[in-house]
Image (tube, rainbow, N blue to C red; front, side, top):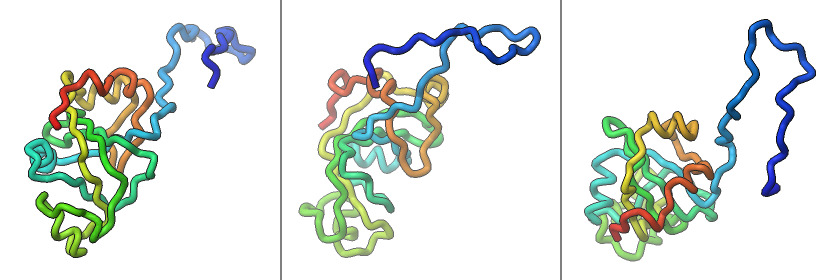
Length: 168
């Protein structure tokens, strides 16, 4: 996409509705995303275990594209807030977790978990200013993801990783 934007003519060739006002504020572009970053929902007990480092892998039913480097954790109800960003490994399959000391790791390696993929949490950042779902929806058109969603570029630019609190 070119660095310069083409200014659109506000006058339209199509007839205007009677009493309609011309658009003065551009609609937010929420379509551009960072393919290296995904937003996923997580329940409070699971994120608490990750923060306390007793859980060091996030287990999922799906393989995330190998280009993904970070998971942005939206903590689901009752919190409903984007609070953490994790730098993660590529997906692992049963038998590939080297250290089995984290919650679920040994069972995953034995194929006893109902999920086929694990993502190691390499680093975890806590947002200095957590973002509630109402703000995410209003500013970025984000709803809580059922699976995962790519992080919009505008959100990626708003939340600078290096400015957040590195937990580990």
